[in-house]
Image (cartoon, rainbow, N blue to C red; front, side, top):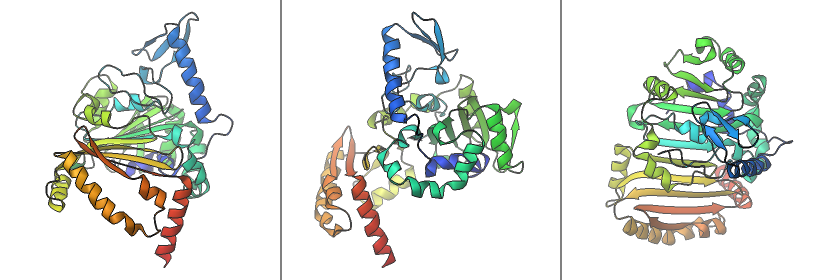
Length: 369
């Protein structure tokens, strides 16, 4: 969990939580397809990349291209090739960002902004989203990292360790450039943040968080308790979260979706769940959201006796789903599926864009009386 001061230091991050506009002249989806074709073509020619130097060589042409974070990744929404023991993840900078999460992290959250901006759900609510993010959008453009530049956001944290134990890695074209960092710091004000080491470090005054420029496109904002660990990972040493216990949980989710998450449940929360439902002993949770057309969601909760718990939940849901009483579209209710797999209770649901509009209208009417 990162401090709110991080958002004050880099107000542009607010855009990622509230939305930003599509790039008209070069749609993300089209770019992704082209990128995949190029990547496949290069692979067939025996292309080799240099992770240490952050570049790759195209065979037969001698051409060198900068490789983000020194590794090859797949187009947004497609599984990337595993890098050593690092689980395969979607592109848009997520794979490189995960390498900056210390092994003390117990929760990972990733948002593929590039894919989100091309989604039907985003475009359907674009006007409302942009109205709520007007100031942030203006600041993003002012600092030359407008909406069309955004790629991804990755957050890693440990709820039980406190607010200083977290890191937020943001990837956007040009975000880490010296002039961009200077612009962000200026807009935030010296009372909030200062820049050091030639624009490579951002120090937050109130809570001691530290921002590290990773490359021209990425910045990692680390809580004060994780600052040294993140710095070590940036410099190539230290143990990553994806190399430990979270590796298995990441495998349960779909890292090619717009949003995905995986983490261990805090002991207190797990205990409360057991008290509320005796026999239910949750240990972890993972899942994803796909916003390509409406919303599709899947959640998996690790627990003992997953098959038994799933059966009980399905019985309870079947008995209660009639209570929707028209508030929730019937198609959404019917889409809910409860099951179990790999030691976890699973639940999936879908809602089309039209379903969401109806649900929004019904909830508004109910709240307004």
